[in-house]
Image (cartoon, rainbow, N blue to C red; front, top):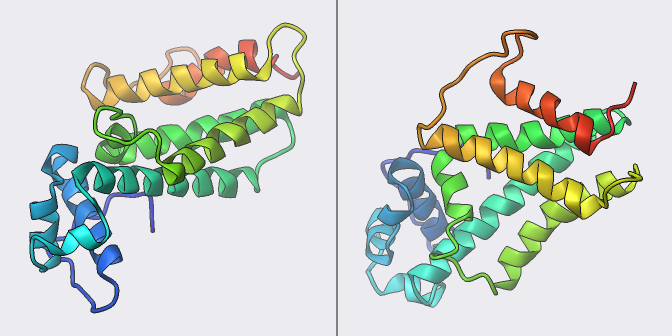
Length: 206
């Protein structure tokens, strides 16, 4: 599944693949109208099944949203891994790739990005959700651990990068910030803020 939004008006249901048909229907609703539009009844209607059918795979709306969030995190983890596999060996270059993957995803798929941070609507104890989240964080920790810093441990540096990226994406998709460019370098703003932060996180390699 692509991490880009998929807007579908109809989701065909194929016998024997109900769970995936429900997930497809739920993602279509999520991409179109956000998490609040994803209800068991709406998903069943979009998938062309009875309102009771989703209970065979999702106990309730919370379980459905949690499954969606786990899939989104897993897709993002694969995209980060794919990009890093083609990146250079320097820490700064690799952190840029990591940050850019998250920024691009969040800006291209705002409703999916909002969902994965909706802890009021998700089951934080779900094993699949935890595993897919940890895959991203653990990859970032591994990258930072491979390049030690005398001043900060990898977790502090990882949280700094996550916080900056998350804050920027959140303000963009909520309309608090608009696209721009750095007046000095000409970089798009989302790249310039990574440049501004990496000197402290990556110990800028020269």
